Image 1 (spheres, helix red, strand yellow):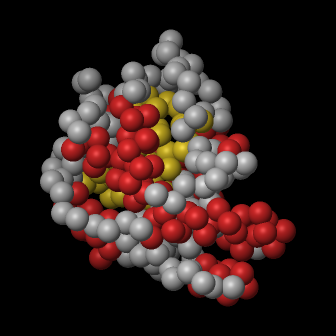
Image 2 (cartoon, rainbow, N blue to C red):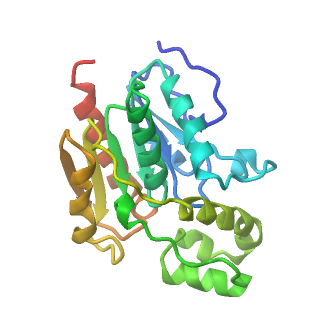
Image 3 (cartoon, rainbow, N blue to C red):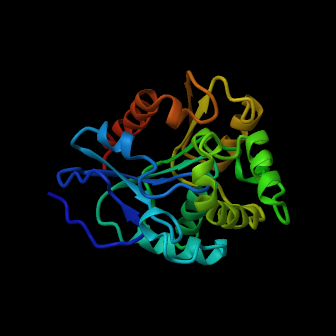
Length: 253
């Protein structure tokens, strides 16, 4: 049985005390610690999902949201470095950029690294795109988010959620929008890209450059869904995560 350390940054919505491998998961903008609860329920006993628990989101709703990417990356890297069990990083949509930043900082600090970086529905960091939101009215904001497919359709389709979610969405977009790419050595861990076959935003031209971010091999897995495949096809996306985790579980420590 593994030892679980208290940490506000990542929450296991479905605790699996006998798991010997963890997926530290980063949801897209507006996502909280319950973002992947459905996937967590589909994991085998040997694998657990711990989802990023950011201030201003869900369980930490009363706290001010974070907008400083550099300081947040440092704190999340420290959290990951304290893990005693093997883990993978998984970043979904804009969460992929944050997951990459954490992996990159761990590498720069020569800290213990995740076994693999998995990214889904995401451009590579040097092509990261954030819709222009500064100064937009609330009505125009939601129209732009819909046009860009920048948030889950569940938010777009339920106006009652918008008033509560708008401040944290603006903060999250400010957070990822502050990223400025600089060249760095490739990560010495494998990278997997999960890409949806019907995604009109992330194309094959966006997938291939992820190969430049790893010296340990790139894997591409295609899912029969659109950009928001985690919501549209939870069983298929959970199976893809399990497959990639199983490949690492078979590797020697």
